[in-house]
Length: 258
Image (cartoon, rainbow, N blue to C red; front, side, top):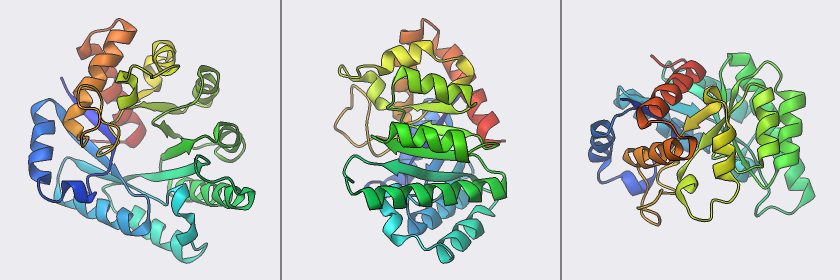
């Protein structure tokens, strides 16, 4: 049985002291490959370096919507493109929209513009996209429908409704399932997981954030992906081996992993 952690941030300072042990623990439970995502130019460069250091790691590069104040149309695009040429870079991300804290309409429009510009980078380089979307369901879906034609990707840590998920699946995009699926207050997410076609699900930890039960509140790490997979299997009435097999296939297909 093998699993792939399709979204984490092992360049975070929380892993500075024991990254080798973290990677080893992941391998011990079957997490054979890991994709780290950048959210700034600096972090994007860091995850590329990690991917070069560890044979089982890959990288996604891009600028998070909460970091768009650092986005320069020419310089930033050029740097993202240059980073993405590395053979261990498998995606553009994480990019997208985040309205949770941002209420200013002008800044929200700026997020949308930067999002679309980075979708264009993905199209130019023929790479899949990892999207961060928080409290921006309508605008994110509209951009996917209008600006992401011909692209493929995933809505990381999906938090929308079942209706939105169905629209996302119609476009051929996947949803990422993280630690919150194990929380008692996960609300609509269990129903979405039960309804999802097998080929439309990815498993991810978002480490060091959102640790699943029974480690909620602690530092998350890729080995905890096993707890997420077990919960998905329970909800869908499938075996752990089945969930591991098709989510691994989905990750390999989307990100063209060896």
